[in-house]
Structures are given as structure tokens and as C-alpha cells.
Image 1 (cartoon, rainbow, N blue to C red):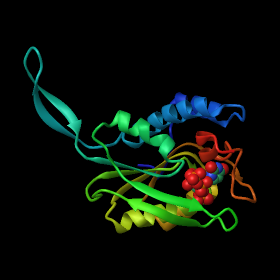
Image 2: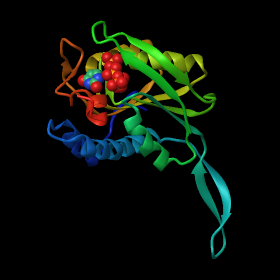
Image 3: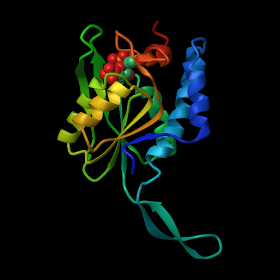
Image 4: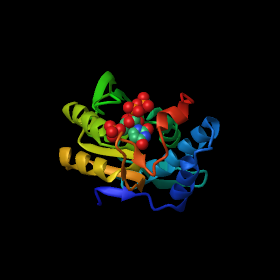
Length: 207
Ligand code: PRP
Ligand code: URA
């Protein structure tokens, strides 16, 4: 399996195009972010193992193929929250944890302000963070989750910068990345170009 997957479904690019538009207002932005996150979550779980389960239909006995591994979703606060509802809707049995990180706007270094996660051993962990920019936040979160037992770890993001992919996969060679796009580069203040601006600000209307 590829370490980095750009979601091949045409809806991924279509929804991302609307997210990128500077005049998309927060109300519509939230809807688009949720829809796109569902497409990305489907891609990030397409290879989950299944298990056979006997069941009874209205006509007879049958065998169903049910999910064979638990999934834990962990949004990085705050922008990752815009991706969480899609995952809980798609996977109602999902466990949820939270990692609160903030980038210092000058040094771009992440600092942790909240960390609460369920048991991760033996699960598929989906780390939700829409923007993989320098990769500092995702690499920091991945390290925290590995220390807490995460084995099968996937970052689900909306846009990845080449610089972020390089930093994250160097820091954590086993991590998988599922994204809607790999953009061109980072600007000198750490924003992804062409990108979509500040995801958290656009999601929560904090300009
Ligand atoms: C954004 C984004 C990522 C981080 C990516 O969060 O949601 O967490 O930046 O940047 P990096 O790859 O360079 O670390 P931000 O710090 O703006 O916080 P927010 O989610 O509260 O808006
Ligand atoms: N965080 C964002 O929200 N946008 C970027 O382009 C980079 C980091």
C-alpha cells in the first residue's frame, strides 16, 4: 500500500475546489469540509480487515462481512474538529480522542495544550488534521500517539505540502497519509500555496 494516497474519487477534487475559493463563507465551508472528510475517511478505511458474522435476513441465514478492526479518530484541535463529524457519521462505533496543538505563529513550532485518547493498541487510528504544512504539528501528534500504543496510524488531511510530507514521513516512516491534494510549496510564513488560507479561521469564522 502506498504511504501517501491522493484520494482518487472525483468528488475529492470537486469539493476541495470549492473549499479553496476565497469567497466561500464559513457556513458553506463547514458543509464542504464535512463532505470532503467523508470521502477521505472512506479512502482511509478502504483496506480495513473484515470478519465474517452469521446473521438472519427476513428469508434465511446468511454471512455478513463486518469490520474486523476498531477505528479511533483523533482530531488535532481545533481545525481537525471540522473533519470529525464525517467520521462519526460514517463509523458510528468509532472511538474518539483529542490532541490540542497550536502553532506558534513566529517559530511555527507546535505546543500541546490538551491530550486525551482511548486505548489505541490493535486499532486503526485516524489522525485528523486538514493542513499538513511544515509537518511539525502532525509529526508531534504522531509521536505522542505512538508513545500511547498507536500501531496502525493514518493522517487524514485535506491538503498536504511536499515539505510536510517529507518531514512527517522522515519522523514516522510507518505512517500513512491520505489527502485530497498535494500542493506546490509553503510560503515564508508557513502557509500552503495555493492552499486555502487558514483552515481553522475559515471553519470557525475567526478572521
Ligand atoms: C493549523 C492546522 C495544523 C497546523 C499545520 O493549525 O490545522 O494543525 O496548522 O501546520 P504545520 O504542519 O506547519 O504544523 P493552527 O496552529 O493554525 O491551529 P488551529 O487548528 O487552532 O487553527
Ligand atoms: N494551517 C492552515 O490552516 N493553513 C495553512 O496553509 C497552513 C497551516
